[in-house]
Length: 326
Image 1 (cartoon, rainbow, N blue to C red):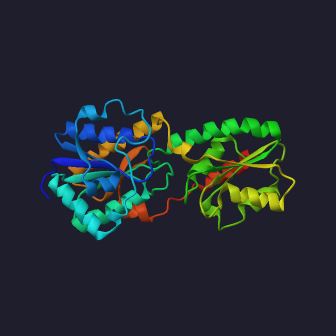
Image 2: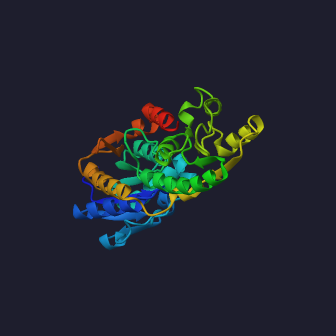
Image 3: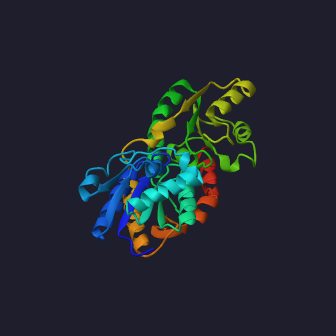
């Protein structure tokens, strides 16, 4: 391909606070560098249905503080087929879009990698997911905001848990990753976190019971990642009711509240840095990479590494939580 003159931008998969800040940064950095910007609505589906609009700097005014994504997002089964991806490629060619910036999580970057390989097409990805589960970056866009939302909710639940001397299981998002549950537990002074990373190593609930839920406290809060490996908060509560009926158990599932809200300063800055870096990467002839951040420095992570490698949990944090919950 020749020099890049026009870039496309899309958001895909689950929304995350900070996506709009990233859209703003990509758009304005591209324009600053003399590039044309075309916004693709509803993710990969918009490539197939040709939902594309030219963006100027004013299109991204006053969005840095907004949650969600102004470009919308949608699942697209057609893009999972060779025929659908060919249709998407034809749309890009007809729109004179020379490269793509895709913002999303594991599924988004997987689709980007396949598409880039099939058509030798330049794509740079931004890690937009509250789960923080992409390898190669210390934090993903939206994770800090979701963590703060969890902290706020658990602080409120603590009031009623203490008043009634109850055991609360609070389910948080994360699917295959326990970052929200583990760090949320530390931030809220919770007694434990049940996470998928160690679900096969030992019985986490049994360990909690053995050590004593309450110890010197008159209430207990346990954060549970929603993963199939943990069974979620409902399964934990049911097991306690059956095996340890002496405990007064309640369940709160935080659900999609964790995805919403105005992004924190951290997420706005992270998304702005990553968005600007995406354009720098394309101008530097980088392709098939995710923009990450490690030790506060921007890094380029190959799609294959970001997607296929499991991001490890910090085991020291598990020990910290255990010590602080006495």
